[in-house]
Length: 119
Image (cartoon, rainbow, N blue to C red):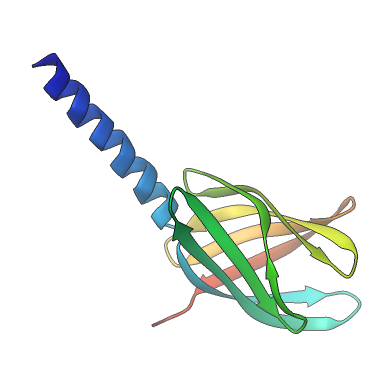
């Protein structure tokens, strides 16, 4: 009986972890007001690959793989891309079909928001 309960508990934990990651999976449309280049638009594609999440940022400069992506509950706690020789960090929260966050370059923080793309 104890092993049965332990097995159920492990399944519940695994399902919870998957459900938390699943919140972010999909294609997200983003728009960012770059102080130097004006408004930029693109997509953020997040996919589940085995036990990890992968993210590709697509925009005017093409596709860039996000490195060091970490999620906790419905939050992107860590992730960065290299853009024009600069490290750009991303953090934010997924809530339904919205992502509200920020991007950080050096010590400058700017709003970065996205909405889930309709299929």
